[in-house]
Length: 171
Image (tube, one colour):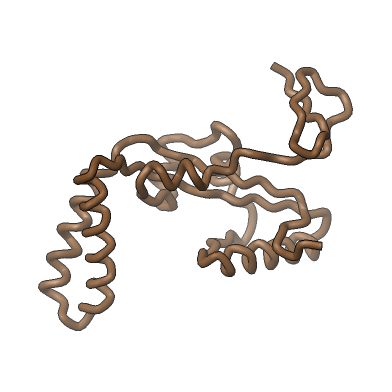
């Protein structure tokens, strides 16, 4: 069995804000440059951020469009123990890949609703502070575009998964 998988039901979504982030990136880059010159004690940490902004400036000069996005992973389980196990498995999986998950202590209703397909709102984009800018191409490569499900038993409009079960959609 493949241990690098989440065995409970989950929903992984990527919400994208297509508004250009070039102005915001340039403003933050200029702020980092000012901090670099004013705060010598934090110079090494600021140098890394500065290098990241220089890469972003270079990509923008080459014509790459910067947008912002937020991944959301919603896990479910039949018991608290099963859910805790799923959270640990997901955390280990993403840590292995070099990412750090931001956990919620309980159900965060606005973010849960935002994680549903087409559930994002301008208010969530602004207030959640979880959207991160990046070139558009990596978002396209990381987008979760497949799914498996067990089916509903009585589909209105059958949509097959890659494993064969049908999902019913009632238009």
